[in-house]
Image (cartoon, rainbow, N blue to C red; front, side, top):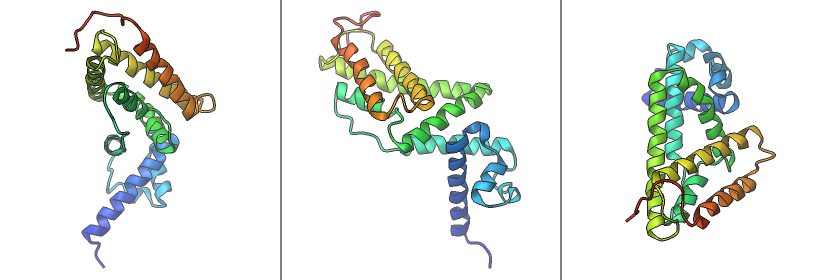
Length: 206
């Protein structure tokens, strides 16, 4: 009996799930056709129908990572500092799903750094994240919840802090369990809200 379009799409979903499980367990360094085939209990020959070369597998994995990240549920944003806090909490590996996603993102950095086109793409992604965070900072300043200061610089500092915390939590989860990550983030945010004047050029948020 010939395969239907539904069968083909179901098989592609199975393949994508297998790719994701390999990434979560071994990162991009362990992503091979053989590993995905073993996870899928299939032959590497079958996978070549989907990924003729390793670069096709990597491209699919990167696309899968981006789509899953975009689809991940986000906390209610609120306004002002609550929105800033929610945006930063959404980055941290506080759940099993977020831990897998962060582990895969971090493992993809080496792949991106080795390819100029990918490096530029990643730089743009992080710049866009900073821009969104900057807008939240501006809103918090307008509400009087943050003192005056360069919102772009504040956003860059917050992004750097939270990404550094992600790496530490991935390497040493026993020392950085979810509740401690939240405590550290709240400590960091408290230093921003309690500072009489943030360093950097003054920018009027209005």
